[in-house]
Length: 387
Image 1 (cartoon, rainbow, N blue to C red):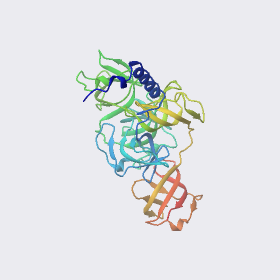
Image 2: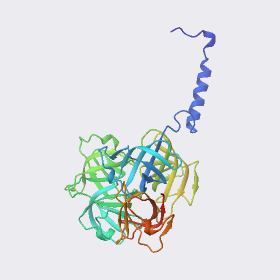
Image 3: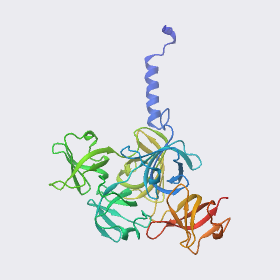
Image 4: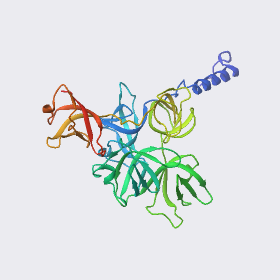
């Protein structure tokens, strides 16, 4: 290929100026690749008819469902309160099509102690609130969880202490590998040890993912089921936690601020957030404040446009679909596509475009409500008929 005539070549100063402008444009959030394509969302499932996360319905019917170690999982494992990370297409009118859904529980281990609103699992404190969902196998909710039982906990990392605010608790097999998801501290590469909250860990020289270890990093850590002679958890694998390192045009994260340096530098679980130019509504940002963040993902950081401080009131749950069974005696419905049960036993249920007598198999409805007192089913407060 022949070179262009000398008279048409750009001078070096022009190229330097153009490069500087491009760097400035990207730094300000504009230009090619500033927002990427598609969307990313993290948070607990709070509704069905597709899965609802952070107020958006994600159609997961053709998505890959996997655990945070990349292994395949079943769609039936997507339940109320299950913590997920979702890659999807563009969010439009409150909906998007998911390509991948990762199930990202924070803790798997044995229950050591119980109190009215807490469990201690593998040495870490798990806080339970009215919006914590329980598997129906735990009759009575928290009271149905036995000491010594192996459980999987979904929820929000609260701080570097390792405390967890649970969104869902379900049983696990007694021989399941134990797992932690938290902030690495006190890393000693010579002794090959580190901490997560109050718990101590040791890792072998052969650990393939040892390079991921760093103080302040939020990681997934799999361990043997028993402590070693020094009271440490023997590490078998380590993996990253949080959003992908690339960019997305839209991003959402819902959780608790687990580490706070400034408004431009904090974490919601494993997601780093910069809210320096965001609209902040509902309160003041700080450690252990519960928030819903919206913005875009840039190099793995959520550049927020809006951060809403959430209170501790129960979330409204929405379940959509066709009724597949009606238990008239217990006043409980089941819907196609998910395992959640919906009670219509409250005397103050409001019906729209129908009555309780119209609840029948095949009818398409939307039920709105909160979790029951034991967290094992949805108590409908409003039911709307869609056909």
